[in-house]
Length: 69
Image (cartoon, rainbow, N blue to C red; front, side, top):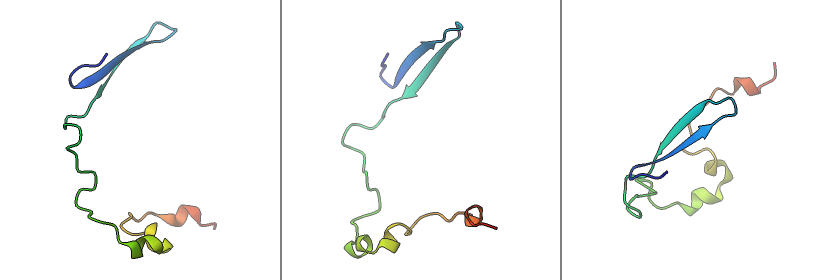
């Protein structure tokens, strides 16, 4: 069932348990969201450099789990 601000559905399992789920829908009017935010235009130099493309502005992680002892 779709309401003004959410979609709600009910699931009844074979054992008789009933679960109700509610998922909120967008609250901004369609077309009003700024998909790119403050990122601006892409730099073609960054796109052509494979190393930059996949590492720029990414979070660091612990890679020790991927290194064999």
